[in-house]
Length: 401
Image (spheres, helix red, strand yellow):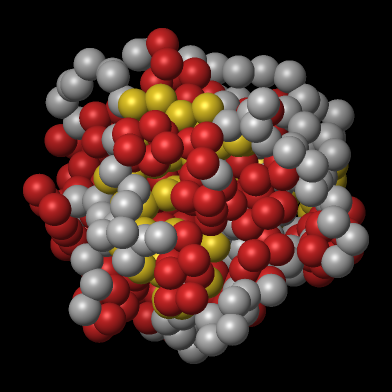
């Protein structure tokens, strides 16, 4: 057996207008304008893979390459930096539109807000983004990473000036630890992309920050003259997936692409929630090479959007992600190379297997994948762990089906 499972979304619908309002084009443009004020800002590429599309029997494949984001090799900084800016804007009593990057890092703002310590939990990319932003603000950051986290990712976070450590528990344990430790430090704040009772504002801001990436992709697709029919989007707690789908639901309306939410087998909290028709949590160590997706507790804000608007939920073994990494790193003649990490390549890995394996005809038909399909993917990270990347791409780790 391949270990791949896909189900249609049979969840009962509910009112998610409040959550969708977070991801409206008006709100996302505010976040995008903030990000454009960074001197490091540049749109990340939307790569068109015509050769691969032809080989897989679809009309088009487009993948957003976030390995170029702010020199940090991942998209996560978009959410953390915007949430920090929104928090500081609230402290000083202004709108975030009045806090472009130059003013945000100014001595004037530092004197107004005083000392802030930003606490967070991460597998690597989010924590590095928080540390990077805090460093530029002249503030402190404390980062907790789950057991099994990459030492290289830990070193990268510490290089940005953060106090960072790997704990014995899983990702969700790290989130709880960040919250409990922050409660002991006056003037500190937790910057996390998952929500819980009494903690919804900051996760919503983080999702809006992620919306910058979706907004860029929409404009770039339009420049190609392309309209996506399908979107494969990976998920951990689901904040990225909910942010992208929420924005597209507003931007495309009735023409919103069919969205498949993709998770690792070891951490399929959204899949299990969709299967049960209600919010579910999974536990354990959640061992997977897709470290950024190793989360057991869905973000309730995102879950509200996904259960109402996602089309399908999929769960995959690690070899699916490894397959996607190799395909992107060694493209067909004429296609552009994309250096994608373990959490960034699973969508392409799944698409390639569904379209090239004769046993999956029924699943292809269920998803509506055919010669007229235009597929959008997000490679959310580059080789954030270079040694592991080489083990997979060069040496063939996780190649078995």
